[in-house]
Image 1 (spheres, rainbow, N blue to C red):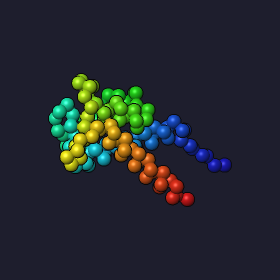
Image 2 (image 1 turned 180 degrees about the horizontal axis):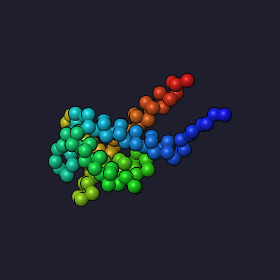
Image 3 (image 1 turned 45 degrees about the vertical axis):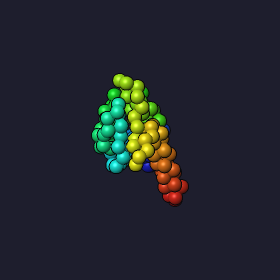
Image 4 (image 1 turned 135 degrees about the vertical axis):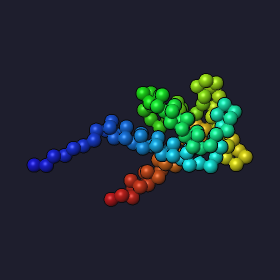
Amino acid sequence: MSLVIGVSGEAQAAENLQKTIKHLLAVVANSNHTFIRNGEAHTGKEAAQHMQAKYKHFKHKIKTPEDFIRLAASKSIMSGRPYLVKIGSKEIRADRWLLSVLEEYRESVKSQEDASP
């Protein structure tokens, strides 16, 4: 008799959510871009720490990586101003940049899954 212990779909989704958010935070922290919050420039490490703190605050509302981006990484709660990422001389909204990072990550994960036997 064998005992099979499975992970429920909900638990697996939560694990994947944690893994995905951890990846997004690592990309921000290891980035050489400048992150602008309320007009002030921050390093990637500083931006990731701020997003991590907001993630802890909104964790009960975050069910998807898009929720994380929307609630913890897109705009100031206090001023409502969008966060920006300065890449070279160009500034783009942080939520748009992170959504592209998320898309690349998902494609990478899917490629790995497709390649595994």
